Length: 199
Ligand code: SAH
Image (tube, rainbow, N blue to C red):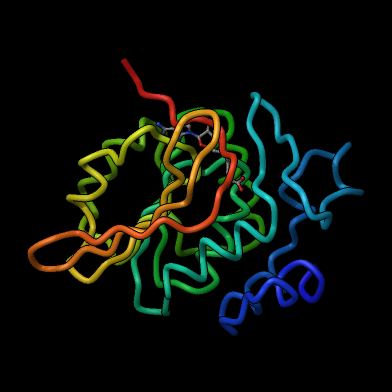
């Protein structure tokens, strides 16, 4: 997975490569999917949701330029796999998931693996998690049509956000918050499940 899927596609950040080497992806997929855990593809995790393709997890993490002092907000805990990769590199991860059973399952696995720097919340992540803001980085792993304003507001000046934007098909967009404006850069095309909004 590391050489063929990541290094061959130009993932270079040593922190990202070592996190991807360390996190056991098979722990985050259902029993019937374990034999495919290191394949180059997303996999179903139940509740109609998916664990992202390893390359996409690595790519989104690398773009954030994380270091060990950073506090990260993740929207869409899902299986908890991306959460683990973030927690390997950053100081603290705050992860919000709208489906309670997925959040609980991810929490059980991550605590079982010994992660102590992750906080979990069940709810609509489009409002972010104000209590712990601002964040050095924000990663959204479900696709909204437009960037939820709360997420931009909770991003530290100098901070970076990666988000898949669009409906049936999306582009990954990098937002870099500067003092007076937020810069946007469109990266690669992707497919994520939609970000659902709570009524
Ligand atoms: N990074 C995860 C991807 C999970 S798929 C992984 O690799 O496993 C996206 C997740 O976003 C799903 O679990 C879905 O339930 C969740 N989600 C969708 N809308 C959401 C919202 N408004 N707030 C929080 N989580 C949301």
